[in-house]
View 1 (tube, rainbow, N blue to C red):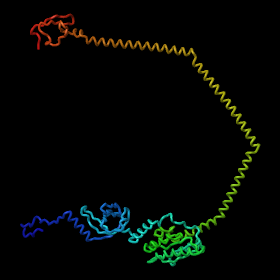
View 2 (tube, rainbow, N blue to C red; view 1 turned 120 degrees about the horizontal axis):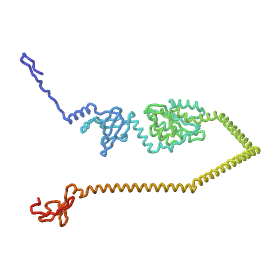
View 3 (cartoon, helix red, strand yellow; view 1 turned 135 degrees about the vertical axis):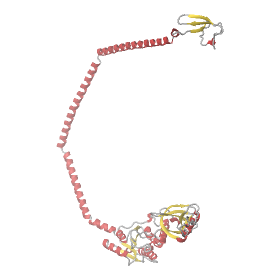
View 4 (tube, rainbow, N blue to C red; view 1 turned 135 degrees about the horizontal axis):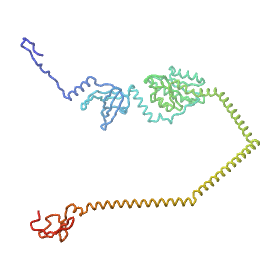
Length: 471
C-alpha cells in the first residue's frame, strides 16, 4: 500500500510494490497433486465397466474403468497377489479396490488396483463363478447326461423345508391339477449353516428309499425346491456337496430354487430347471392335465372322426355314381356319335384349307410367269443399255472438257514463266559466247572474254575490256 499523505504536496507511493510469486515446475506441481490425492483419498472402492484391457509382456495389466459419463485409467502390477485376474476382461462390470495416484510421466491420475470383485455380489459371487467353472469343466453340466422327466409320474420325492412357502405352493398345485400324485417328503433346512449338507443328505435318502423296496417304493422324479431370497439365502443350493448329490442321483432331478431371475449351481446340474416351485409342480402334473384334456376332448374328436368317415363314404358313393353314368351304353354311343361329327367337321375344314392353299400357290406361279415374260425382259435390258451408253458418253465429254481446261491453265502458267516474256519487258540475258553459261555476277568475267547478250529481239556480241568489271 502507498504511504499516508501528510500534506497536499506529498502524493505517497505512486507505484505499488510487486507481490512475491511462487513458481512451480511441472514436476513439482504434479508431485503436489499426487501427494494430495494419496493423502486425501488414499485407497478407495470404485465400480464400473472394464474396457481396453491389455496385458503386457512385463506382466502388468492396463485397462480403463468407465461408466456412462467418465472413465478412469487403471493398472494392475505383476507383483500384486491377485487370484482372480481372469475377471479382467472387456465388458465385465467389476468393483475395484486400489490406491489413487498420479502417473507423473503423463500427468494423469490412475488407480493402482489391489483387489477385483464382480460388481454387486462380492465374495459370494466370486465363489459361485469359480465353482461353476470348475464343475462345468468336470462335465456336471453336460447336456448329454441329463435324463428326460417322466410325463406321467406317480411318485415324486420332494426335498424342501416342511415349514417353508415352497411346500405349500407345490402341494396347492398338485392338489388342484393331479390329486392322485404321491409325494414323498424328505424335510431339510434350506437356509443357514449346514443347510447344504442336509439338502444333499435328503437327496441321497430318497435314492436309498426308492432302491430298497419293491414297486411301491418307486420314485419317478425328485423335486429340489425352496422359495425366493437373497444370494445368501439361496447359498445352500450353490454348495458343491448339493451339486454332486444331484449329479450322482439315480432318479431324475428337477431344481426349482428361488424366482425366475435366480440361478443356482443346482439348476445347472439338475436334469431340468423350473423357474419357481409352482412351475415345477406344474411340470410334474402336466401329463395328467394333458391326459384329462385329451379324455375330455375325445368325444368331440370321435364325432369329428365319424363325420369325416361319413363324408368320405358319401364322396365315394357319389364318385361311383358318376362312373356308372359315364359307363352307360347310351352315353357311350352318344359320345361316339359326337366324335364322328367332330371328325366330319375336321375333314371338311381340312379339305377346304388344302384347296385354298393350292389355289393360292397356282396364282403365285401364274403371277411369276407373267412377270418373267421374255419381251418385257428384252425391253428392260435395252433400256438399261441405252442409259449406260448415254451415261458413258456424258462421262467421256465431261472428262475431255476437264482435261482441256487443265491444259489451257498450264499453258497460261508456262507463258507467264517463259524467259521470252521476261525479255519482252526490257530485260536481257548475258552469256559466255563460248560455253553459253549465264553471267550473273560481274566477277564471273575476265578481260577480253567474248560475251553474248540476248534481247527480246536479236542478240549483241561484246568483248570485256580491262577495268570494266566491278567488285
